[in-house]
Amino acid sequence: MRVSEPPGRPVLTVVVPMFNEEAVLPLFVRRLRPVLDELPVPYEVLAVDDGSTDTTPVLLQRALREWPALRVVRLRANSGHQAAISAGLQRSRGDWVVTIDADLQDPPETIARMYAAAVSQDVDVVYGVRSDRTTDSAFKRHTAGAFYRLMRRLAKLDISQDAGDFRLMSRETVDAINALPEQGRVLRLVVPALGFPSTTVDYKREARAAGESKYPLRKMVGLTLDSVTGFSQAPLRFATWFSLLGFVVAALVLVYGVWSKLSGGTASGWASTVVILAVFSALQLLCLGILGEYVGRTYSALQQRPSYYVAYDSEHHGPRGGPDEPGD
Image (cartoon, rainbow, N blue to C red; front, side, top):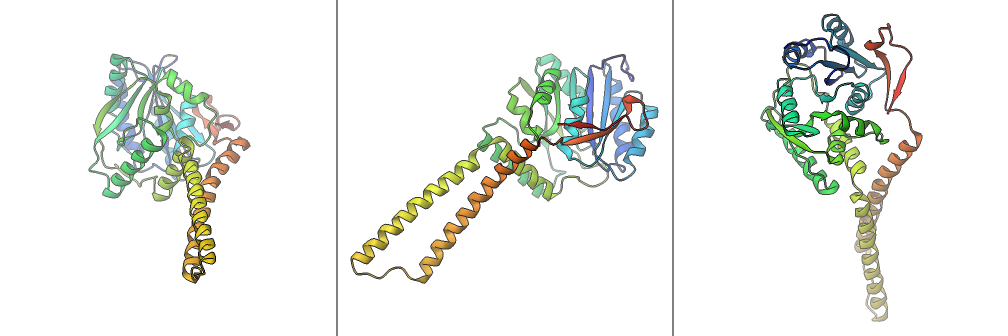
C-alpha cells in the first residue's frame, strides 16, 4: 500500500528543521519520499524553515506543489535548532512523530524500522543510536562522548552518548513535551527525562550529503551550557562546596597568622599573600559565573518571551499564512 496524501489526520508526522539547506534539500526529498510512501499508514512531512536566508524557502515551495503530504512552516527569524523542532512538535498531528535533520547524516530509511519497533514493542519512544560514527571527526566524537558522560553524571539521566535528535515519539510523548512551560529546552535531554517506555534502533551515521554543518563549536558550547544549567543543580552545589572550602582555608590561615604573631614568628610574605588572594578571587569569580547562569535562565523564564514566531504555515493556504503566531 502506497500512501502519499494523508486522508484526514495522519498517523505519522515527520518534523524536519531546516536552516540554509539549499544544497541538500532536493537530495533529502528524493530519499525521504519513497521511504514514507512505502509505509502502510498516512503521513505528513512538516518542514520547519528556521529563517533561512538562501533559496531553501523557494525549494520548499517547489516541493510543496509536487508533494501533497508536505507542509511548510516558516519561522519569522532564525530561532535555533531546538526551537525549530519545538515549533514542529507543536503543529504535528500524527499519532507518531519523527524528528530528523535534513543533512542526510541520519538515513531516512531508518524511519520504517523505528516505526515497526514502536508498534511491535509497544513503547513511546524509539531513539536512533549511531552504531558507526567514523564519518564524524575525532574532535566531534570525543566532545560528544564527554558531553553525554557529563550529563549522565550531573542530571542522573539514562541517555546514550550516540543518540541525538533523531527519534520517534508517540502522541502522548509529544503532548507531554508541548505541555512543559520550560523555555530554551534541550530535547535530547527532555525526552529521556520524561521516563516513558523506550527502545533503540541502531544505524550507521553517514557523512553530510551537501552543505555545511549548522552546529559549529560556539553552538555546541551553548547547547552544553543550556543542558547543564537546565537539568542539574550540581554547579550550584559546586559553588557551595567552593565557598565552604574557602571558609576552611581562610580559617586555617587566620589560625596560622594568630599563632605566628603570638609565637614571635614572622607572617607570610608577599608571595603567599598574592597567591591566596588570587586563588580566592578566582573561586569567587567562578561561583559568580555559575550563579549568573542560573539567574539568567530565571530572568528569561520570567520574561516569558516566545522562543520563535511562525510567519507562514502552508496549511493556511495564504501567501503569508496569516498573522505571526508565537511559540513556546
